[in-house]
Image 1: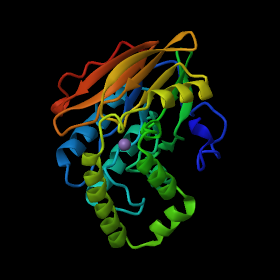
Image 2: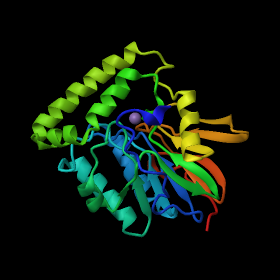
Image 3: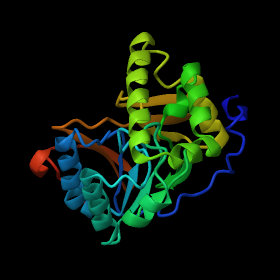
Length: 275
Ligand code: MN
């Protein structure tokens, strides 16, 4: 059983996410992997925040908004622009919940204070049109990747995080760059199956949280899966990663779910007729 693993036992009981609502549109995105070297994707995201996202009631970012987050004190110009974009969205009353991804789990309180976003737990249980729905980044589902799960437990240790954040920005940048190179090499050695969500892990999380819908990103394999779960039809919705010329948003409105493309210049964005 995946949740009895060391490091995972401190998880609190399921709770409702703040800002979850059954009325109005809720948007879900993940895996934008924003970085100073990806100005087009940043521009696409800023356009989304100033445009399409303004028609929603709540935005969930299910992890890996950033390709690497080395601490809330990183004030590089692109990050300042992203902070301002998120602040612009929340300042008009649209909620924004951020779940930590494997690349940006160091997002913290200062970032939330600057942007008006709320940090959510991974996983977060909520309801949409009455359906118990579990939101995750998705890396916890890749249980066959034992090396990664070991690494994850190590770097999420509060003491390890604090030691890292004590280092200078320059030192942290260098360490993040090392990690990025290593994880790139490791990925090419791993089979596709190992890096996908494990079906047993999916079932375990649905059971543990009594959910019948799971929404996650991380794997970059967007799909709408249906599965039999304890005599019910359960669903697993996998979000798409963003590219310089195309993002994607999952939209919930009154019990219906749609995917919408986010294109440069706002082309192709229609929205639903949601009160
Ligand atoms: Mn990820």
